[in-house]
Image 1 (spheres, rainbow, N blue to C red):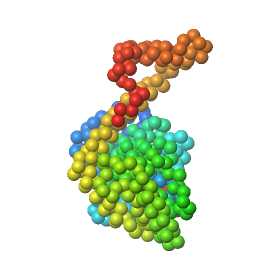
Image 2 (cartoon, rainbow, N blue to C red):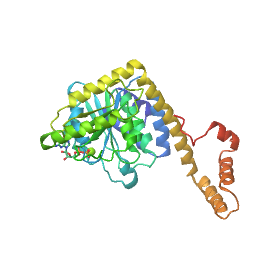
Image 3 (cartoon, rainbow, N blue to C red):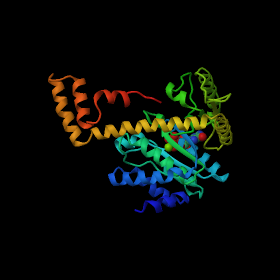
Image 4 (tube, helix red, strand yellow):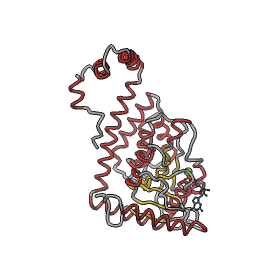
Length: 342
Ligand SMILES: Nc1nc2c(ncn2[C@@H]2O[C@H](COP(=O)(O)OP(=O)(O)O)[C@@H](O)[C@H]2O)c(=O)[nH]1
Ligand SMILES: [Mg+2]
């Protein structure tokens, strides 16, 4: 495969080239990894920036329906819209809890839209990198908006929040006074909480649920990256396509403010730093899984189990053997991977 031709194809916005490029970054084969790194480096200077919108929520809350309606609305306004999915279940089981996203039948046929289903098989731990690189490809291809869908379970929403400029949490109307068991951590990264299905019989419940969450958001610590009124809660109906224009104008307001105050670039810089450290971590962990490292680890593990050495000594011996240039002290000083520096 000719990488420079592929890069040109992506830059010209050719959707088939983009699809092929994403397939390349999804591959775990060594020669593909090298080509993908080459491709991404060529595209890094494109200077193009999409609005990256992360969207999380439990299965059935209406994420796909929302993306279809919202994406269509944007596409009808002339914006180019890309949709990516982060599905943590496919990494483990090959199954999907995001559902069959090809159901976005109108959006997928729109000439301004590009929809990428989540891959059926992915290396665990490779999910973040694959998505990050797919987002970068969509940016280089000149998409105005990239929508990233994920399920509100496990770690995937944290990954998506680190990949987004704006993070939306989609909720369903719920009776009772329970806050639907939404984890505090997710509430804290949400920019807008969207209560979907505010239609028909569910409308009144949706309004109440929205008020509950608006109250809960007010109790959270104020974040420097928010103008007055954010984070906020609102209702929409993805099915009846109501409230979507309001969602877009709120997102636009937030983005404009963040751009003017430097928070947009600040967040992107912090994310780049985060992914740099994450990449180091993943690369080192992958190296530890190679046969020579694993064999040595197994041997040392046995020595630790039988009391012939200590865990600390054995770990230091392993590192010193694998990376002889790193003395133990130098390793602790310059590359403390146990700490999140972001
Ligand atoms: N009443 C109503 N139903 C909706 C709405 N949005 C989605 N649904 C329904 O909720 C179900 C799950 O939607 P889907 O988009 O697949 O949810 P996802 O699993 O979060 O992607 C489907 O039966 C949709 O028709 C809405 O705004 N109102
Ligand atoms: Mg879905």
